[in-house]
Image (cartoon, rainbow, N blue to C red; front, side, top):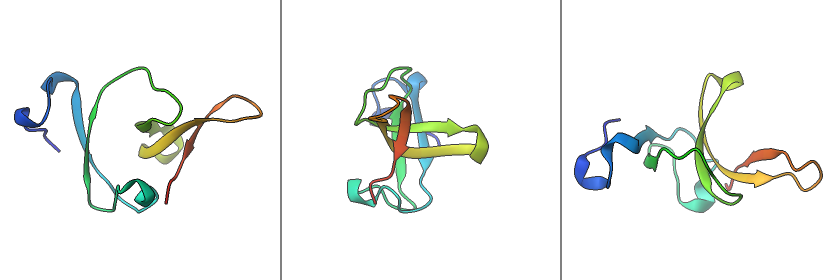
Length: 79
């Protein structure tokens, strides 16, 4: 999805993705929505991120969390 320049500060770092599914519905991100994100190599626990997942051959929109036992990064749904 192309991002209109009037929606963002920097078109070069902005991306838009159409959402499929309702796994983030508690954060009001619903099936068919378009999410506009800024490309950023750093994220913090609790941030909502768009991330490429090789095993899915596609992107996911999820909350980033640290596993309390291993400390490994995890993606969590909110719906």
